[in-house]
Length: 188
Ligand SMILES: [Zn+2]
Ligand SMILES: [Zn+2]
Image 1 (cartoon, rainbow, N blue to C red):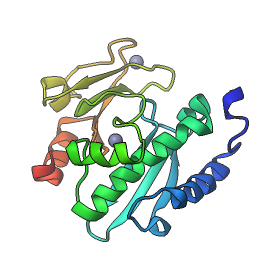
Image 2 (cartoon, rainbow, N blue to C red):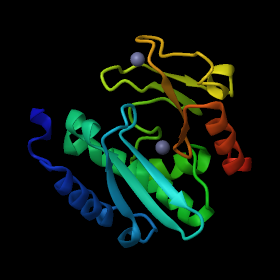
Image 3 (tube, rainbow, N blue to C red):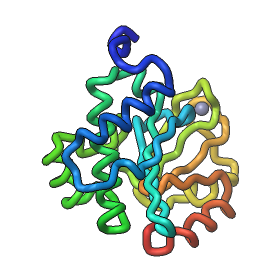
């Protein structure tokens, strides 16, 4: 906790400071139009970037607990990382962690991976607030496709939620899975 003391103390301050910090980052995007929000629920990712292809709106989601854990200095790396996603979305309509992303991330001295998790395409996370169980999958295995078919958290046996990492879309049932597949199409 002490490491966070010199940085923003409230969620509101964190949002204001992050937006102000983004202005100082040397990257070709209109940082004024980015929406900044806080996630209380994300457990494994320090931040994420969403893009609405219909209107071009970029939203960067910051995880409060991650900020509190690492402090402002290190958290600016997360902000730069998410700005690279924003840059890819705005210029190319898509974003991942490929060569183009890595080159830009290196330019900005940003971490190449979303902080605090590895690069699995699919993530299963326990729905119990007090349980930190999480695992990753690269392919659509049975537990990914049928989370409602009796599969459970590996630690506490609660239900889990599956997330498609790149899009941030989640599901807890097979019909939810089917909807996400349809929605993503080639972006799956
Ligand atoms: Zn990322
Ligand atoms: Zn659990």
